[in-house]
Structures are given as C-alpha cells and as structure tokens.
Length: 265
Image 1 (cartoon, rainbow, N blue to C red):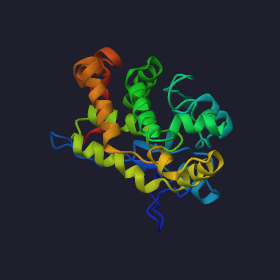
Image 2 (cartoon, helix red, strand yellow; image 1 turned 90 degrees about the vertical axis):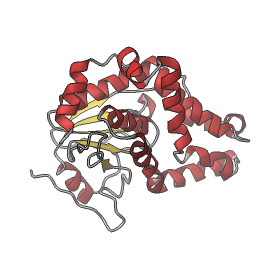
Image 3 (cartoon, one colour; image 1 turned 60 degrees about the vertical axis):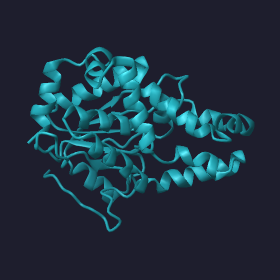
Image 4 (cartoon, helix red, strand yellow; image 1 turned 120 degrees about the vertical axis):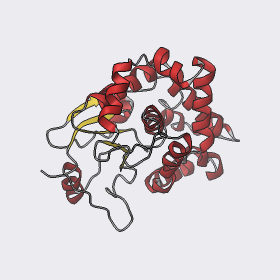
C-alpha cells in the first residue's frame, strides 16, 4: 500500500488521535532536514474510526512503540497497523510520579493532597526528573532510539496524551539529529493544541475529586519549563547532553550515526 497523508479539516491526520504527527520536516543546525514519513509521535491509538484506520494503515508503519504503563495498556489496548510489530516499552517505574496517576485520583482526599494548591505543577516536574534519571526511562528511551536508528520501516511511538513521555522521546530524537533547541521546544509545545480529549477526561476527574480546574490544569498542558527542567537535569546528572547519551542512555556512536544516516536528508 502506498503512503498516504490525509489531513482533516481540523488539521489532524487522525482526529481520534489528534497528537499523531510526523517528526519529519525540521531543519538541523547543519542545514539538513529530518526526513518525513519515517518517525511519528502520537497519543494513545485505541479509538480510531474505520476511515482513520485505513489512513493509519496507509502510513506504512511497521513498528508501534507503546511507552505507557502496563495498567494503561491493559485498560486501553492499541489498534496495531496491519503487519506491524508491537513493542511495550514502559519508561516509568510503577511507583514513580506519573505511573500511579489514575490511582491517586481514586480517593478525593488523596487527589487533593497530590495535586491541590499548586502541587500539580511540582508533580509534573517530578515526572520529568524521572524521565531523565530513572533506570526504566533510560532503558526505554535507549530502546526507542535504537529501533528508530535500525528501521527499516516507519515507526510510531506514543503514550496516553502524547505530550510528556512522548514529548521527551521526541525531544531526545530531534536533539540527537542536531535540531536546534528552540525548534525542539516548538515541536514540544505544539501538543497543547491537540489536547481536547485530555481536557474532557481531566475535567471529569476534576469534578469527581472536587479539585478546581486551576489545580489540575498544569497536568493537561506542556510548558517550556517542563522541557527546560529535563535538559537542566541532564546537565546536572551527566554534565552535558552528550554525557547523558553516552553514560545514561549508553547509546553507541554507531547507533547515533545510523539514526542520522537514516533520518537526515
């Protein structure tokens, strides 16, 4: 089947997964371009319509990388493209910030302690610290990069909302490819225009827990400060981004060269 690119009137390739988008098209510091049609980032892929499924299958995706927790995967299993390999690659400890997100809302009092009065934003910074430093995250993101470098076909990676775990994965890949930090941040915050489903779901949690929307809102959006904090932690823990790649992710030079050779035009 040939590759298709159908954009709906609302600008989304897949309206049921509005954060599904191509990582290609960005320019690097050296003036090269990230190839399109090879790497896609997304939110959860479990509610596609029949028409969307046809579009989805047409992208030629043969690897689907699921960054969600086992609880999330079991509750809302992915729709896997025809002939694609599915890989569950969790990037959070089961007891980490983010992984027990739903459980914290099960008890209204617990939710108020965890997220009320400005705690939600602190919670999000803790999430990003874990995505940089936790062993599960280091192993998971190394696996993602190695799969992206190896190919040979198109790959999609995603979490639930496609903004935090997926956001750091996209930032990592684009930075490895030599894309300027400002451009990386622009790609990252583009998720904010694609969170209608997250808003709906989180407003229900707000009502059930009795937490005002202002307390919960920091968890429904990405902020440049969240991404900046992750890069700051990279520098603090590993000395530099290169140190993070070499000593944290333990990626080889051959893998990085393979990624660039495959992804840069």
